[in-house]
Length: 428
Image (cartoon, rainbow, N blue to C red; front, side, top):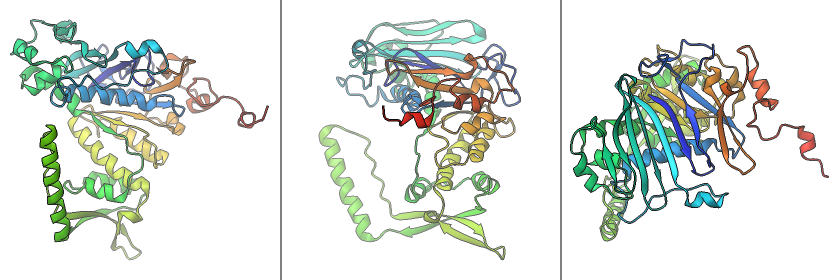
């Protein structure tokens, strides 16, 4: 379970900005809250929705979390020994270019809260820390104070010093430990592996078919599509063998890429040969009650996108993990978006405590019974052009307020323009 995440000096984020899924004391709906004994009050939020003008930094909040995940999972296994650390510091202040980038996260695993974070420059990870809070008491697992200086707490067991010797200046200790099968830390790094992201706004039919070439469409997805009125009642997969010439071409290209990979020292190039193509067809009911199958070219962009989103959503709901969606409302009706929120906000469909983080421009969702006021967040740029991230719960409102109207009138900030549209285009 994710409690909070913060980033500093990353893309449009300059000062520290934090997103929290810890509920506040607001007296809003509580039936969709997630039980979590590791936090005060015993409840956390199932979702957070981020609003803001175009280019205000919504996607950069998600990108920061993605970058943190990538560093934890791959900085040791994929990083070059002298390759530095990839990053994009805030570009509109000269001091930021030499200042470190910092990520921090609080999450819960096996009913224990953990606080983890690290800071890094273009060259190395200069600090890293991990603490646990069993029964609310802080315990140090490890602290890194320089590129290769690290100390350990009594709570961390296993081959910790051996792994420290394997750690490079441009690899995280947590990443190094996971790659070397440290039992305790590998388990914690799996939290980052469980995070799922979707930033696909428009999905072509061919991409959807490729996505489901190995996995069946979940029957729950078909039921969801049917209930929201798409007309979809079933599906089938059709297979077609590739011509021999296409298979031979694949073999030739794979051989060439394998040789090139060996020459530059890159490992792990995929060698699978695709001998057949797979197409997904969705069934609709005709006037006589029979099923008629349409290929995905004949389905709407929204239906195709829902196929992708829902496949991931139902897996996340099963595992109790976190799903992050950029532009939830792209190609989707408000009621479809609200139905997705409802999956996370109902204990019947979310018994394992899965969570959703999404950006959106759909202000109608602000009126949804699925959202508490502390689940609504905003991004806007300050005078320097830096992103500020803040929740609606920081602003004095009442449960009876029309939040959508207040937002569109500019009461909460995070809109492109608060004046008259006519005045915006008047020539001085």
